[in-house]
Amino acid sequence: MSSTSAKKPVRLVLFDVFDTLCTPKLPIHEQYYDEAIKGGLSPGTITPLSVRSAFKPAFRAVNADWPLYGKHTHPALTPEEWWTKIIYQTLLEAGASSSELNEKIGMIGPALMSRFESDKGYKNFPETIDCLKELRRLEIKTSIISNADPRILKTLDSLDILPLLTYPPTLSWDVEHAKPSPEIYNAACAACEASPGEGVIMVGDELKADYRGSVTAGLEGRLIRREGEWSDGAVRVDGEDLSGVRVIKSLNDVLAEIQARRST
Image 1 (tube, helix red, strand yellow):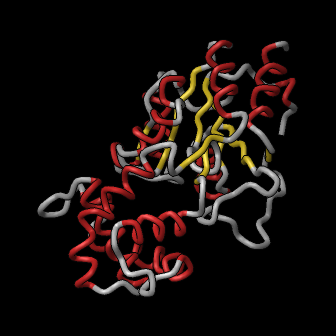
Image 2 (cartoon, one colour):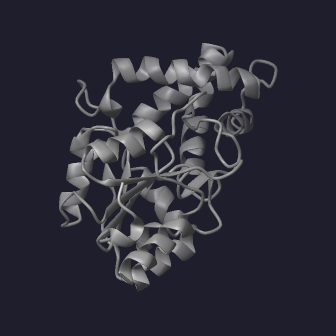
């Protein structure tokens, strides 16, 4: 791998969202439990740990029956309807009764979705906003690639991230391909009026989806791994081989690299 000083200036920086720019304020399963109890579920039927155990199986089951957020099923689902199914199935598998859920889901579902569309559910990392502001000052193009539906735009807006991007996020919902597929990276570059290659950096926290996916698509991958900072749902595999992987510990490392490459 060539040295940073030998590389061309950075043209575009693409970011993953969760555990890269922001992270849950509390573990997801605790937030599900909190809103479920507020919404009227009997406290003795579920626990935060039972919700945690139920979430992934529920997600897989709903996604198998309604892939791509139910966008092309008959009838098609809205993202809100799809997530309501996730919430319902999670709480059901966590121990809630179907009769109680049928009565309460109309309150619990919207409350949970509203929470995760705002800064009540998520928080930025300390350097996120300053990094995006500095990239804008340096006139470096920026955008986001996320395996998500359009609801994430509300989250990004509430966290003051969306207004600082040069181009709108590229979402798996829109392009119908998900990371690590090269198609979503190619679509993001096209949307940002940039060709893949040296000078286009992708920053994310997942080795397969963000780093290897972007490198395969011809981008420069940067794997962000903050010390002691990741959410309960972050993808981490014991014994990951990070040899040859460009690992950074902060978004500020991206700024430092950009500055170094500008001065050559």
